[in-house]
Length: 567
Image 1 (tube, rainbow, N blue to C red):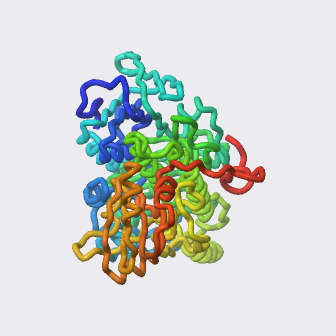
Image 2: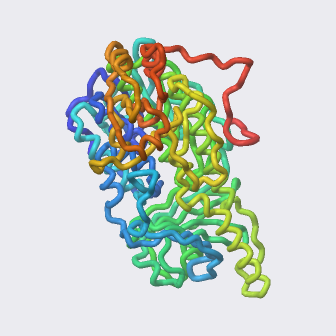
Image 3: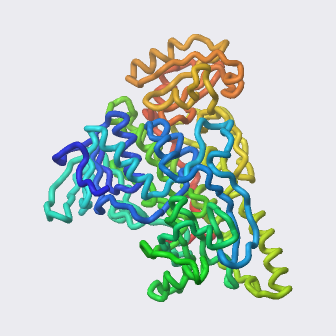
């Protein structure tokens, strides 16, 4: 994709939302707003071309979002062979020893999940971003501009005035926006101008990506096809190899050290070490990046908000980074739409940080745990030795690695679906949430306020998730009292509300209450067997018209990780 414009041929002087950064998070936000008929402008300083497979895993919740936008089938079936097995294999090299294996099925062999109408997708960023961009450009209210970057901005209280420049033409101009959202990555210009710090580990190691072509690479070794080969040397796990297109395009991710000189890394040498000296290859791109574990101190101030890597940066282990960012976009999308349509309360956008920052901390910490399990560069003496001692080390290490990493890669449902907005000012809690399971693969659906509303199949073939999206949805189950007062309260405040009667006893049991109010993002806002005495107060609470309670007792905001430092 090398387009400079969307369907619009001019850049508006004013817009409800200005999005800075055209990666997957910025594109997802633009898509969600376009889907909600909210005009916006997205600027991206690059040309839109993506060569690197910066991410592979589109998590199950992200695919549910794509289902809502009508692009799930494109994301799942873009051309990767569906009979390709996704085993995770630990090796000394492709032409060396196999240490251990976590069997994982091909996509065609994965049975449907009971908790979702969708599944995971293997969709690298060079495929995923163009799918999003093509869908974005179908909405006439969305303006997409490449080669365009933010110079500065000023939040004037009633709106944000931003100066932008087209780096190809040199043209500079101002855009006035009701809100500005920085989706501009770890080096975020928006975050820096706000003065927000980030805490955690600013430097874990230097890392390197080698995109290369090696047709039918599996024919050159005896390890078979796999979704990931973790390569272990005497210094520990030093690289991972992943198929990008299931045919001839691959990514070798090399883990350096804190003091690795990027200029000292020879990608051809590292490739030969990983795949074998006699295997032919062609390097497509070589890139250097820094592995970090950071969460921003703040996610928003006034009319300026941040999302994605601008506020949380994590090791890629477990594929949580982009997927966490998409969750940010979906949380922001309906709230920005609500304030633009004037039914969202004056405190609605304040709930964004309260909801999403704890999720960012949660996902960052889990990604760091995943990295530590195999990627902490703990030396493994003798692992490559052709001796009885080497054989013993390989056998013990293989068992340990396979056991320790199974939770990270065996469909960690709770990681992707189990985050909850506990303590959110726009959620009406009705008791403490159960503790999160220690095993990230274990996820139990619940209608507890703040949680993702449960999936179940309806008689007409739709999922309950298909009921949610553009408006609040009140689910009524057998025995529910009249909901006239709640419908009237929503109408009085202009809140879009759809009432759905569900007679299924199975679904009623899953949803646990006779009345369940679900937000546009698919999270439960309130539930009960009877309506509250003041239906208008409930509507005002969930639309963000009630001021959140201040943090008392000198309590400090939650911080990422243990022993966190600033960056």
